[in-house]
Length: 99
Image (cartoon, rainbow, N blue to C red; front, side, top):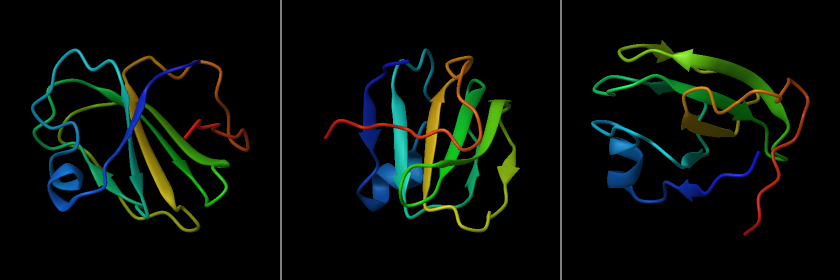
């Protein structure tokens, strides 16, 4: 699985995330983030939450709009991907990023 991942660095990028977007073809990384919401999103997304080393701790496939994932312990990064992107990723796998 290879996909472009954009890091949400600014306040505005973190605030808007994937809200109001359709036909998403990239991933979005929220560093230092252990909870998200999908309010104002137009389509489902796949969510992966990792520790500091990008070890997968939580996976939520097909998260519908208008949902909340409450804060999770030990989560350091949260990734949002297009719906149905995550197929072979499991808990305790690692996400490899090329910087």
